[in-house]
Image (cartoon, rainbow, N blue to C red):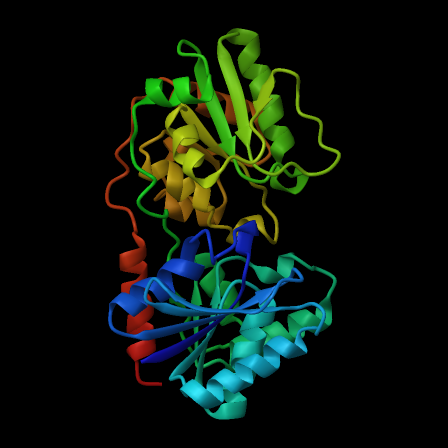
Length: 357
């Protein structure tokens, strides 16, 4: 099959041309290794030159939103469709690309697939015209895939009677694996004696980060030898407690080192339009490293952790979070059993593409 993927160039701030990342890279990549032709048309939000190159078995193209506005990207997509005649158009990474994939599929009589890994309507909650177009795209697309069952159920409201297929998230390879804790701590200049609790991700108020600050205060009252460390982007205006160590935004190769230095990895969220349908990749990464995790008990995270109460903390409850962290810090490395890989997720994705619609 010939597959045209529409995607932004820097999902989660990572340039796909230089930093392969997540489902936006690994699904097209694995499909290309299964004998399919993968073309990726990326929308660049920066004012940079157009790019066309062949790399890792795929054809990559990037068009800038500046100074030509998004219409340049749209016209480029139309030109590609006419020249390569794809069997499928896939909308990745954001509302706009799903809308465009469904539109172009109808325009050219080509099958379209809309893929979602979050509840995109939670990003711009008041932008109702965009939500209408998104729901219409979900309704009209040939196929729809989602990162988990809760999100699939939400999307299915826009296409009753037709399935939404679950293509789970996974940790990227090969970096995430168990590493020697002491060596990792030495590399990051961390204590070799203290218990270390870590958070890796967006340090935002709407994720419930204050609950983690409060839980740490509770833990410190009974044990001064518990350190809390962070890496990730910090929301403007958030003040970290003086007892917290923040590494800023670590490079990709340092994230496995960070995770393997921990006694417990914490994944925080809230019961919200975002949190209810969030499948945090950092949770998959920590599990791949066999690190004990404590995560906010949202339906989506509960699904990832198979309902294991040892690893689930009540939302917005710092006392329960502190108690779960304390217990998890006494555990050794955890074997979470078989975990989804991108190869397995690609197998599901390919089966969707090969179905008769």
